[in-house]
Amino acid sequence: MNMEMRGNPSLLASSLRADRKTIERNRRNHMKSLFNTLNSLIQRQNPTEVSSLPDQLDAATNYIKRQKIKIEELREKKENMNGL
Image (cartoon, rainbow, N blue to C red; front, side, top):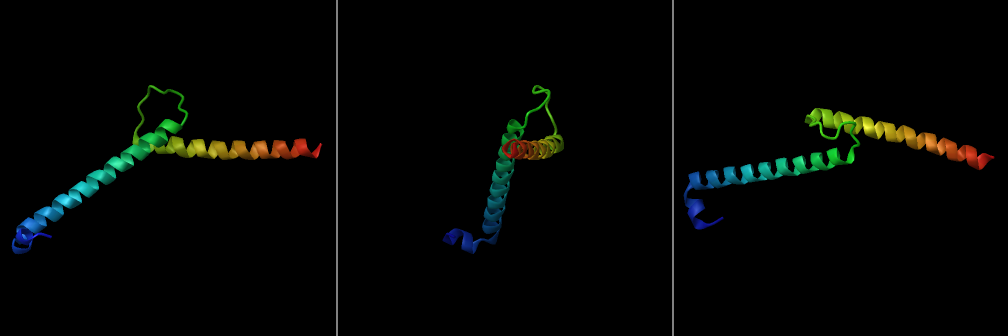
């Protein structure tokens, strides 16, 4: 902290507020990037359709559930083939 800010509480408060705003903006941008990455990984029926964030999360959840079921079915199939 420089000498100017120590002597002036309003400068310090203003600086802290700006820092918090920057941190929050960076957090929001990071979350947006993560949601975009997640959305790009999900196979959608209509790729040109724009989905809301809750719809994207529902689609991701459903996709993961379908993949888990598919993995289990393939494991069972593999076990059956190895048993023959």
